[in-house]
Length: 290
Ligand code: ADP
Image: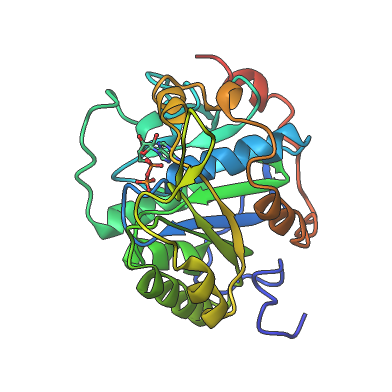
């Protein structure tokens, strides 16, 4: 393919790209980005993974939030350690079949801090891509570190990212965050699939009215200004926060929470199956052992 998106669409890898191993066949890679921590980027990553998986897709989550990993806990993997298959790592597999690789699955103790500097973090991301046996995956969601710093840059330069979902919250400086994401996406030649506003409102438990706690959202104007789609708005829902804390996002997530975001993911053209791909027939069996 000769166009500027050739690489993102599965064309020849650039010299900077980390190589995919022969036991992985990842058809689509979607990065979930936010301007800062705490806005619910990991929650949205988990929610997208659950919805895509419920629709019959094989789904993985690469937790690139190396110093603040929260995906394993959300899907009930607290205390588990990733296992190996020869020289490769095996992702852990959740109760509904979502595969996860995260720095928390490599630590002795999940409360250990990850005091790694940039190059070591980049090395971990290489391990999570090149040295992890993902098997066949319809979607790999990448839970990015917050912001648009050097780790984010490493991910975009090194993995064949097909699209970006930006997560904002109403307290954010939405305009600045969308602008930074658009600039980064342009530089990296990766399309932005759209923006999801998390913690957008609360629903009154008595009358069902939506209350915009942080004032009227400016997202629509901002998104329109940058030509970016709004893919959904999620309420503040304490029961979902509790479910994430208890490792039960898969059973607690309401159905059809983010239909437009799922449609945007499904619209991505899958990467072609590379010659020489060997399905890792036994990896699920190994990886599910707690
Ligand atoms: P980030 O990845 O942006 O740092 P997280 O996804 O870890 O943020 O979310 C931060 C905290 O907020 C977590 O405890 C999570 O369960 C909670 N949370 C996220 N989104 C919601 C929501 N829509 N309603 C209630 N709690 C939420």
